[in-house]
Length: 301
Image (cartoon, rainbow, N blue to C red; front, side, top):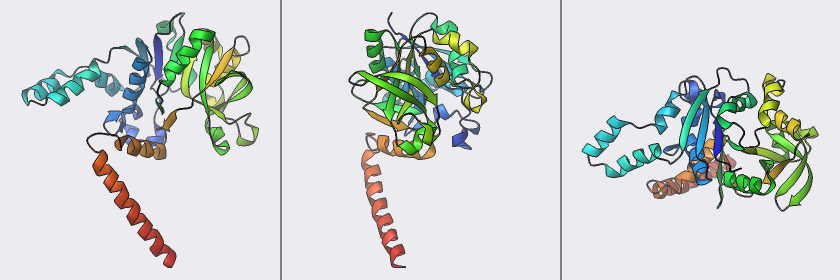
């Protein structure tokens, strides 16, 4: 069956970005001039996804507004002859995918958010795309997972190696054997293990291709780490009755779920942005020279 649906969980409270996210969804925090969630929707489109369900929560209405038309703004841009900005604004509304929305009333975990997509997904395989990870590769990561599914007809989770001291931040796989280059048979999936108990350094990185059987498991899944319904726990349960593979991602991952990663990503994207790349590059060079000078002076003292 063709993979044509994706679920984007966007109901988190965004506590790591307070106070900015007190009234603004973290998914709307921009990388230069584009909200992070737009990067995710664009990846889905490039991967052949036709229908997207965004699971939102309270104070997330601006996500819907962003992808909706804004007649007043468009009329103003047209009257002022700002054709380029007009086309840019209209392109967001006309991305070529069908967007749907539902709410998660309480922050009960990623697994609970995915369970709310059950009626939307039905009996089809589907992608799950988390907004904290922006992926870059010649072939979009979601498309890579879809291509794997087309061959195996099995759920497939994206992973990549992370520094060992950071494994406690992630869901981690216990690898068994490599079926073919980059495709791993998995013995177990573990949610945020202690560093000294982690079965590997392969971390789950925010892209999943799941079969609909996951919903029955989520419906009966007991709360796990943090008292929440963990998707990783449900995947581990499913792996006991049907194969769940891990796909190793070799592209570039930008973690925008924390302040340092967000700032680094903004700088990297800014250096390729046609309007600001030259000035930003000059600023960074000047700032580096200034910091080097300050460092030398501090060492002399």
